Image 1 (spheres, one colour):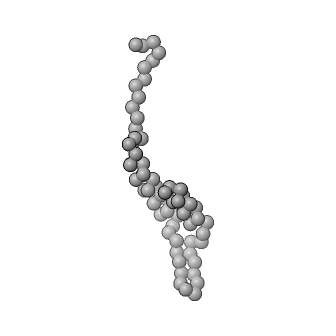
Image 2: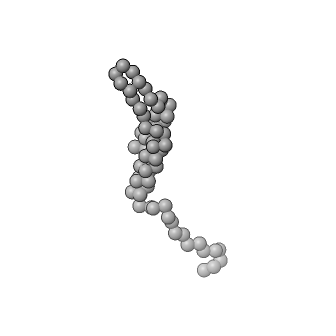
Image 3: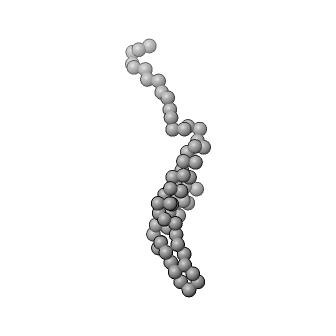
Length: 65
């Protein structure tokens, strides 16, 4: 899913911001809004993981047993 969103953002950035023709006009979302949407979806995906980005380790110096 993240790859699809990355591809969509990449395609939207390469395309025109506005297009008008005989049938009407089309306007794309701003790039900042697309980036915010990507960050939101990435945070939702990260929240699903069992590791919440925080790990506790116990450091034991050599010879201290």
